[in-house]
Length: 247
Image (cartoon, rainbow, N blue to C red):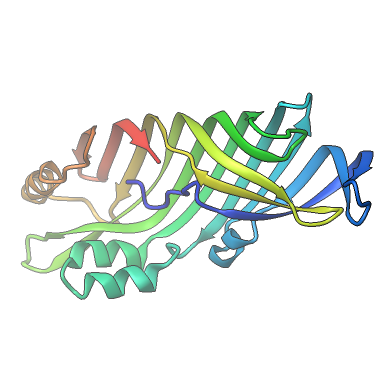
């Protein structure tokens, strides 16, 4: 169910505002601007059409707070072609999902940063954070079932998955100029829970034998560290998945 997971291994090129308390090195050859507010954009994620922005507010020499917003507009699964090449036709079911599904993603991440070095928004930091994520899944063909006439039909599903996780980010922020810094997210494991619902509607009533066959196929689906329940009727399938989540 976790079709897109955004990892905390990004390089941020950052544009900053609100200049504060300018000071320089002893030889005055380079000026460093201490700032209270820092605005950031994740340039590496733009290649995946994932738009990610962060605002950081420096409170003291060692403490700051930040808020990150990320949005992936609905579209093909990121890196779909690369994943398909890795599969090399070894998993037709996964390939069918990748080729059919449209994925969208939104997340909100508040965090508190504790700088271990010179501070004021610079140096190595530890940041406990909370992350809310929501995934939109559209037109995903999760399986094919056999109809009474012997032909096969894909079960097309739509739904949403939401996750709530807590984690700890290790990072480092460096000054690259008077108004540009580099924010390096080294690692940020996070763990929590998720819940999701998927609906698979058919364009015709399912017969009792088709419902039974579909039930048997769905029971064979195993999502690690989670529990899936489903209801099958002549109009289609309703599935609910709940369990652990990590990133």
